Every structure is written in structure tokens, then in C-alpha cells.
Image (cartoon, rainbow, N blue to C red; front, side, top):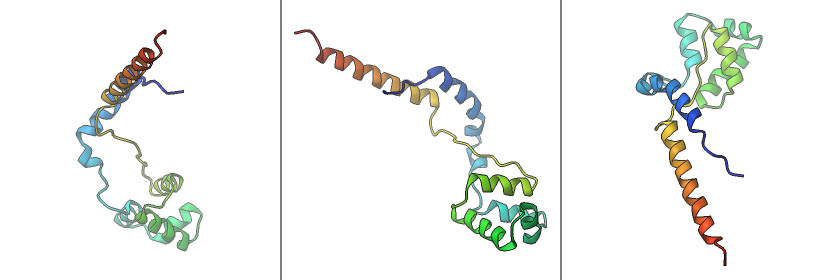
Length: 123
């Protein structure tokens, strides 16, 4: 079964992400290791971060390395953010509007459906 685009939901989602799309440059990653940068800026030793996370200093170091490599889970990022007294922000900002994409897909599906009806015309 093929999903039909939900135009109304796309419009609502566009309303929520439009402000972020306008200032997309501000949302782009400016560093590959947010946790380490924030930790160092606020003067928090790695050992203190490890204590707050209830893990070893080596494990905390590995988390920072995994973040730098892009191999860290969202759960770990959430825990680090909490330990650093920060909010983790995660989302998808569309390159084009969700509404346009949904309307385009719906139009394609409508054309395909009409084409199939013509093929199945009574003999």
C-alpha cells in the first residue's frame, strides 16, 4: 500500500521549520566535537564530565572521540548535553518545503492512478 501525502500536516510542519530554514547557517555544525568544545569553554575537566555521566574518564574520552567521528548515539548526546547543562537540538530542516514535496508526490500518484485506470478500460 502506497502512502498518500498529508498536505495539511506538511503545511503545519512547514510553519514550524520555516524560521529555522531562514537561519540555516546558524544551525549548521561549526565544529565536529560540540561536547568537548563546550566542556572546555566552561572549564569542566573530562574527569568531572565522566563523574556526571557515571562512567570512567576513558569512556567519557571515547564518547567525545565518537562524536568527532560521527559515530555517537542520540542517547549519548542527550546524556552529555544534560551533564553539560545544555539542551540537545536535533531535527530535519527540508531543503524545499514539505508542502511542495507532498503536493508534487500527490500529483505524481494521481497521474499514475489515472494511467492505470485507462489501461484497465472495459474491453
